[in-house]
Amino acid sequence: MRTEMTLADTLNTLGLLGGSTLPRFVTEVGGQGDVLDVVADARSVKSLPGPLKMATRLVPAVRSKLRVEEFDGGVAVLSVDASAGGLPAHKLLGLAKSRIESVLESKGLPAGSVQIRPDARIALDVQRLVEARHPGTVVQNMAFADGKVAFDTAA
Image: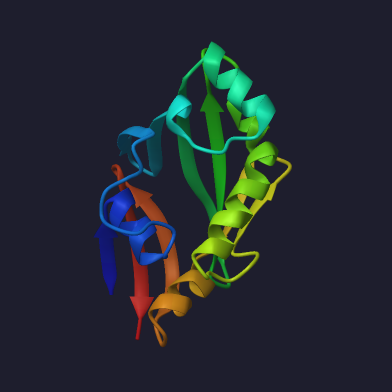
């Protein structure tokens, strides 16, 4: 079965967000085709590592383009192309790694479900995240479709 959801509903389904509204730092979500566009005001993010906090003072708006490059064994590999005032912000993803891991732990989600790779890609174990909240659901594919997240699932 194919299901298309907003980014907020997707993050809620995966257990990464409690509720159906995006965090206040996400100011815009859209996209065209297989690209998801996300704009964030990084000044609104709490508990940023020091280097990122300093960078947000200089350039607060971060514009990101995400694309699902592959989906295999329940894991979606997302390419991230982000910039903040022309600076390649996606190269700073590694600095957010510990923050992402602490969010997963605080929500009781499986460790390692989200992995920040050094090549500005994110491996998202969609199957493990969905299984933690909806046992018995098998995720066969994940893609972006015109600003929404699309899942193909089987029960």
